[in-house]
Length: 437
Image: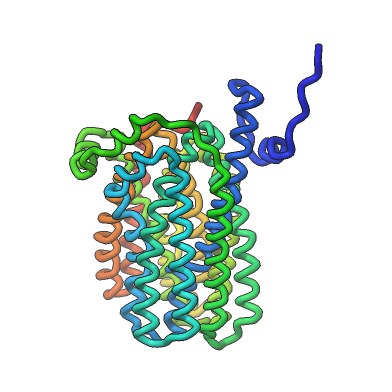
């Protein structure tokens, strides 16, 4: 019997990183998966590195403080960043579905994020006050719109180029790699930042983030998608408003997923309130930003790959546990604040922030894997788009409600979000299992 041909370098690396049952794939399919998978890992890692800098929960609020932008502008950061990337997706779906090479939409989205981040860097270096705030918010809106293209096209391309059982691991590896670099960034900020808030340092970080997205676009251009016929163009000419409504009305499992994802906002919306509470006990200089950036990086590094593996086994179960743990962390945090003397312990806030972003890493990997696994082909594109558009609307509503409650105190808002998390446990448990092969 002849010996099996030697594995290529890319296939060896991929098989070490991603564990899966490949008995149903021939050598050519394994090689194609490895090539596409590694490119997506690297491109997503570069994008995630940029996300650590263009962070509406940590870096951008610190930047606004250093520039003297009105405090009101800080309240718009998270809604513009999150909702802006979700709301347009259902409207963009018909255009995406007409593309035979959907990686081009991802490349365009990465380029748009690079331009938007460069505009933020320019404003940080040359402007101040209200003018800087307006330009940065406008650039963040462009950033969010561009991100919606990457979100739509990226899940579709992954679903067509990487088999079930491997997709969550790719998301997890990218998250872990970006986390390692975020820790380095956070340590540098902590050690070099001191008590002053320097806009020029943050402008330099934004410029480096813009370069990361340029590199990501170049890498992603090498992904090779399966051929799509002309029927995809006709499929993209439907009425997206009617299609979205019918999908939410008639597809019960999908509707429950959207509801579960809404309740999982507990891990997304609670960290800024923890940071706001921390600001009241010190650490408001640039050096104070470091522990929170480090916490974000640690969460990605620790949780990225393990959570990816767990998501491939059962993304539904991972979402359920994520909601439960996030709610428990908030309840314990609020109990700790009620203990005399604990409120002034500054270490408590980065520690709680770390736990919350670690849980959010699990939830994010799980929900991305779930929506990719629950459908095939163009239906996957529609699911992603409608889910994100619905989430954009719901995020604005829940964000406004939690913001109104925050006027009574950040603790009230955190209590409300903990309640959402408990409800999320019940809804997530009722979802059908889709991730197992």
